[in-house]
Length: 289
Image 1 (tube, one colour):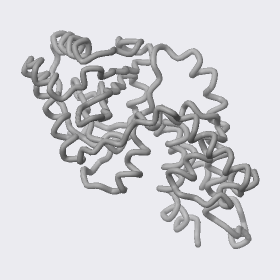
Image 2 (cartoon, rainbow, N blue to C red; image 1 turned 90 degrees about the vertical axis):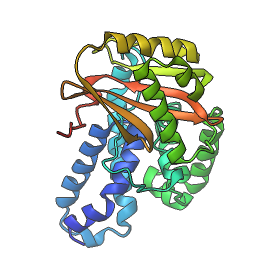
Image 3 (cartoon, rainbow, N blue to C red; image 1 turned 120 degrees about the horizontal axis):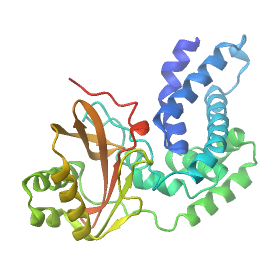
Image 4 (tube, rainbow, N blue to C red; image 1 turned 120 degrees about the vertical axis):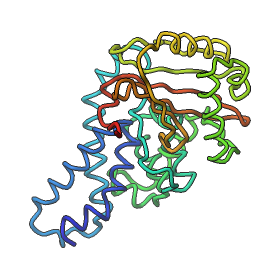
């Protein structure tokens, strides 16, 4: 196949892999572009026996390099770090629920607990269902070693979110009720969709004013959002979109995307709210006029 055909065939896979490793849309896009630029410089593509494994290896190596270069930045990051939000243009389901769950903010944060190699092995096996022999060729380890790495990684993620029994439609209804209740000043309506011990995490990156520590309990979260709403004097719009595979919210102020919210659900209520306000993490999003 020509490079253009290979791009069409493998770009979605490589982006999905790099994004889950890094939690950065822009870095994942850069890595995919770099992989195909490098591939275009190879004269004899026919000599590559397993193109998928070859491309995945290139993407994972570049992702590891990016992780290591970003490690110091993460150590000095102001406040809480959240992944760059991945917003779907269409509300139509494009992936299975299992694939969407592995894109969720909660899931991506759990992956941050793993080492670089553990993360890659875990993603390839748990998310993409690769055989250990395939993974071994990508990470340059034996299949036996990859199996052990995967088992260790799986064991270390002890607090993996329980998969919600709510349908996507029901989740979206809860998110819409949360927002409409906030806009109406209806604290009771917000309480009805929030777990009592709900948690809010906000990422302003030191660029905008946000809570730098998690906010625990529904009551405190509601007070915080009411405070934000009262200070919001400029014209704003709220759009409901799929964010990281789950129903989410985009807040636009003066034609600029200012906040993106994603949610996690447990026991048929909202258990976690993730609010990204760092403008550097929203640069890849475009306002639709």
